[in-house]
Amino acid sequence: MIILYYPQNTPPRMGRLPLSTLALGAVLERSHDYMLVDGNVDRDAFATISEILRSSKGRLILAVSVMPGTQMLNAIAHCKAWKSRFPKITIIWGGYFPSMHAEAVLNSDYVDYVIRGQGERSFQEFLERILADESPSDVDNLSYKRNGKFIHNPELPIYDPNDRPPLPFHRIHLDDYAMTTFIGSRTLCYESSVGCPHKCNFCGVVDVFHSRWKAETPQRTLEVVQLLKNRYGMNGIEFHDSDFFVSENRVAELAKGLVGLQVQWWGEGRVDTLLNYATETWDLMEKSGLKMIFFGAESGLDETLKLMDKAGVTREKTKSIASLCAKHNVQSEFSFVMGANPTRTEEDIDATIDLMYELEAINPRSQMHPFIYTPVPFGTIYDSAVEGGLNYPKNLDEWATHEWAQYSLRRNPHTPWLTPRLYRKIINFRAVHQSYYPKTNDHALAPWKVSLLKMLSSWRYRSRIFAGAYELRLLLRLLAKSQPSFEGF
Image (cartoon, rainbow, N blue to C red; front, top):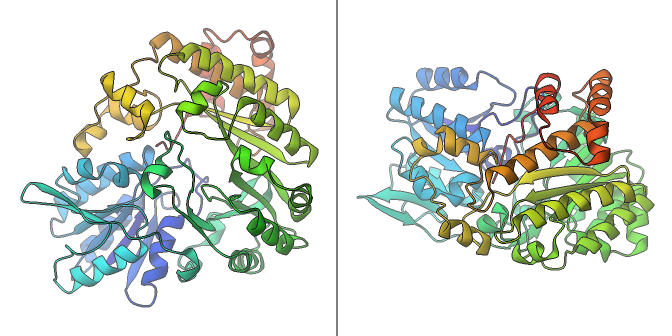
């Protein structure tokens, strides 16, 4: 029996389609018997899988998709318990966390293998070897430990998504994932490309995919959109591509196909890329139902953007894209990683806060997502953190401790330059900002809660007094059950 497990990483009723496990299922659909268990839907997934393992006969293989943060913590606890109860089970991890921290995963005695990067073809080959009682030692992308030594096999080129079989949507109950969001009453998600061509040195996507990118043809993506609309009633789609807007020609052709489908959509893109789009393309995207674009603005200080290898993005360009979005009735979302500058840390934080105020003035429908910078294992800023004492855990049990769990949730970045005072400055600002500007695409808050938070935070937001915002942090916990992050890189 093969079990594809997607551990819980969202609050109840907030889970998106488990695209990573669906992609694995797609290559197994005609050749292997498997089950897909999603912890975001099955809130007692541990008991479900325990019963499957108890009642199954023959070889047991558990493939787990793991993002840093909540998903990592659940995966650690569950896999450790299953390996203890069912020692013959073969456990293999894939996803962003094990791809970046393969040796720490393999240093733990309850995970047998790691597949780094894109896993579809490698996992299929791995199964062929394991089920035939052969060694998987020649499987590309595979990492494992033998005689105390780590072995990391070479990586395949990334898998062209046009060559993958259709995702097996029939394996899950789509009603469990159709959400009410800003863009539709039945919103689903999809990923139409793989990887990212950029080199931003704070982003785990770069570390895993090494600036490689491949995309579906517009026709293939349109077929999926039409399927989800016609068969499952979808009227809003989130494209979870790391950068949906890499190719203007591809986006323009896709937008033409979306016109008249009555499906609104959201995607993530680069500030500098979309500033170079033709006016005709922007008009077409607006006509096709584009409602929101998520941008990585990252910092209000141009020096920090250069440190991040965020080539082509500047403070002024970010303000220009906010204006362009407003002109085309597109809501702009901006994420920021605050505290990334090792030498001008407070100046970076202040400049970033100032930029958020400017963006909200340019496009009042903008949304801001301020996070705390947490190093991923490469790049110049990471090197500065290592010089200052950052030392990653050597195994999963260490990653599961409170200290490192907080790190993976982007609450304790271990950067020596982010002092406790500056950390408090960020979280107090976030409390004020989140209270005054609740996310319009989050329908979890009742209107009276939104009004109360906005009323109590308005004086702080307008006067820019963030210190000691304990009352708002408490209210956010009580009213919004707010957590800064369920995932992190």
